[in-house]
Length: 319
Image (cartoon, rainbow, N blue to C red; front, side, top):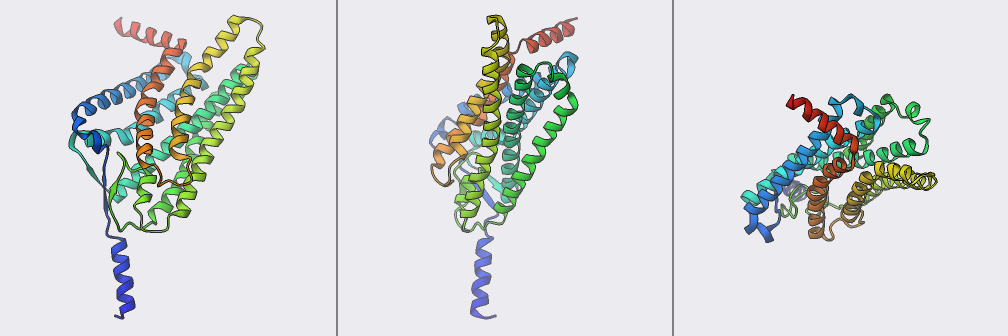
C-alpha cells in the first residue's frame, strides 16, 4: 500500500470514529437536577394529560366531530408525540447527568422532532384557514370544509413535512464526525450536531435556514391572510355580541400562534446555525416545555364546546 493510500485510509477511519454523542444538557444548573426533574416531569404529565383530554373528548362526543376539532385533536396528538421525543431525554439528564446517544438514535430523534414540529406549523396554518372559512364564508363552510377535506388536509401536512425533513436528514447523515462528540443541548438538535462535524457544513446550514424559513413563512403567510380577513369580517358585524362570539373562537388559536412563532423564529431562522448555541438551547426548552404545556390549557379554557363536552362526559362517568 502506498503512502497516499495509507493517508486516505487513515482519514476515512478518523472521519468515521464518532459513533455516539454525549448530550450535555444544562451543566450550570445540574446541581438542581432532582428539583428540575420533578418540575419538568409534572409539566410533561400535565401536557400529555391535557392533550389526551382534548383527543378523547373530540372522538367521544359526536358533536365535536367537525373539521375544527379534527384539526385540534390531530394538533394535540402531534404535540404529545413532539414533546415525548425530547422530554424523556431531558428528564434522564436532570436525574443522571450527561447522556450518551448513538449516531443513528440521534438522527432518529432529530427527524422525529423536526417532522412533528413541521406538522404542527402546517396544522396551525390549516386551522387558521378553517377559522377564516367559518367566519368569513359561513354559508359555504359546510360544503367546502367537510370531514373528507379535513382528513386530506391533515394527510397533506404529514406528507409535506415528511418530504422536507427526510431531505434534510439525508444531507446530515452524509456528514463526517471526527472531532469532539459533546452536543451542547438536551436533545439531538441539528444546529448543535452540525457544529461538531468536520465536513464542510455550509450547504447543510443554508438548507436548514431556507427550510425553516419556508415552513414558518408558509404557515405565517397563510395565517396572516386568514386573520386579516377574519378581523375585517368581525369589525363589520352589526352587534357587539356577534363580534365577541366570533373573536372568542379565534382567541385561543391566536395566543398559541404567538407563543410558537416567537420561540421558533428566534431558534431556527438564522443563517448561521453554529452561533448562539446556548440561547438556542434555552429557547428550545421554552418551546418544548412551557409553550406546549400552555397549549392544551389555552385551548381548553377558551373553548366553551370542550367545556360542555367535558362536563357531559364526566356526568356520564358519575352515573
